[in-house]
Length: 232
Image 1 (cartoon, rainbow, N blue to C red):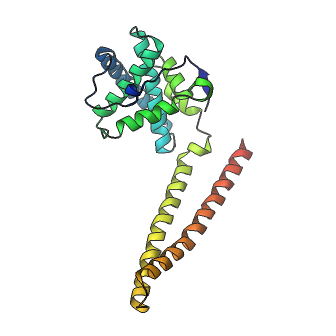
Image 2 (cartoon, helix red, strand yellow):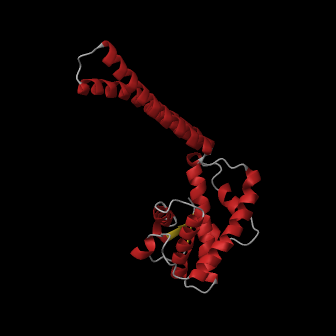
């Protein structure tokens, strides 16, 4: 991911978690930034609707959230807060917005902590999504420009994510099916075996199915990555 330099942030344990009952450090700033970001989000998502970007869902959600965090950070600074304070207010505002959008209360602190980690790269540089959100202007196409940086990145593509998801389901459901069939077969046609013996046989045969599927998935992944590197 590309990166740009920004002033270092400050973190305190009390600011790491966001809950529904927490009183924001500056309610007027938090609410103002949430209102601004909702407008920005609606406008920017409308602009990229026709682009038909095909990204992994988790990557797309994370990128948009980091972009909105950058917008909130700049908003808090424009309202008179120092850089470090504005950055923490932006995380508070983002957490409050998640709660307003009915995200599970228990998941909000974990999501904020995850975004906090992803917002910074090595040497205290900001992630590209944060930097572009911070520098964005009303009515621009900055979110589309951000996603344009990743359209040729195989590792965040929707196609690669679907391949991974299908492989995961094949291994999980295939392994469970084999365990069920083995237990049924041994119980019906080979009575007298101990429960431990039956389970051991089922797990061994399931592993003989899962491991080759996993290895095939690794081969396909390496093949796709090799073609991608050659194309670039």
